[in-house]
Length: 304
Length: 304
Image (cartoon, rainbow over all chains, first blue to last red; front, side):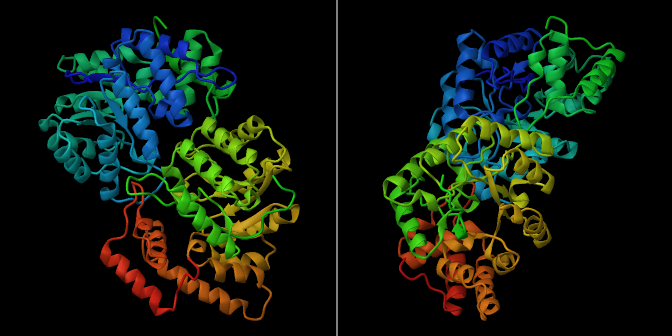
């Protein structure tokens, strides 16, 4: 992986499926190009990518396809944390081998109430087994979904044991106090804190953080990345408020189906709305309401 | 799969690992033989098997090894429900091809707050893709761990759409009212209800249910299966009370490490205590306390 740290805004890129529910690599390549053109990095295989509805084999094949298409691996931070140790190792090894700038790693999330000792052991085993100095791990803290979180104590232990490898975190707790504690405690050590959405982008930048990794960067990439670049500008608070307005619209709907509905609507490709079970696509009425809500604030997705 | 329905007691067989954390198929074969000798069926790859810490490839290889060793596939109900649709299809197809008596299927459990529509679609896709009349699915309801559950309404829909395939359920909610509702509503239609532990074995048998699938059947198989066979005997309540005493001891410790510690202690093979991350083995003091607790009630594992 590269010496340059990943910064700014990344998107957990939504994954396109064909009608038979197979992932469509060509459409994913196009979507990733559009995001890069809008200054947004590629956190493929995130929660909002339906990554946990894809097998390891499917994810490896898609990642290879992105790199073969000429997209820059140093702008990629694929999600590689699975329930099974051996799956996480296999996928992480693939990402490192392809030269990805980092990986975003969920803790194993099936067993609940596990100890920090067990989670430390999980990350340590993966790091030792991958055994590659290029590996850069961004921890993924998303307790509302994974139900298994990353404590400050665990970060401290991991940073001490693997200072070159533990590169940062995505904090999707939705709890600013937690993000702030990470920023205060670990960012000065070069541990890069990414907010889990643009809601806290300005606050994160002002506190010295790296940026954000956000679902809605799939649909509003230019405006979000512009704030990351201009967080010291006079109109930064107004920019943040404008981002919030768009995000709040998407939050009225199931997020992943709504993001894909928007890509389908603004890109003129109805198949983009397809989701894998257990998710369901927006119903027609929801889709029309989303469109009306977005039109009302002058939303667009130029260049899609 | 077989015409004969699975009944009685099954164990989510604990999975032995070597010191390098690789599953040990030979030890698993031996453990399964011992369980069968004690009249307990093989719900391999359950929660207590650390199934979600194993890759699909590891599970397929282990299942093949069990069948190749001559163990009867009609006594096997492997867990095959994964987060990813394609993983569940691959593993279920393997189980059906090997002639397993049934499969125990978790709903996809990463995404939370999903709808019954989405879960119906998930099971339906798997059934259609496996496309084999021999498939018998036992739904797996374990909300304390999976956080995604199986509602009565979902069971009704699935039974109506796939009456020959939806064979029953394991209810690990720990809520007798829920188990009772399933027994009253669906057992008369030939939908076999298994309690999620022997705590409710006698009550389940008295209400017409099929039996139980229980973690502690790994360590106390003969006594549990004896109650399933003799639930109409005069001493049934006393037998239930004796089972409860043993189970309550194990419940004082982290369940999976405690089960494996017992197999290690009573079978004289320390490596049996090994668990994969994110779990951790019992500490020496816990292990000694467990042994003392079990000795105090005259517990043994004859023939192990």
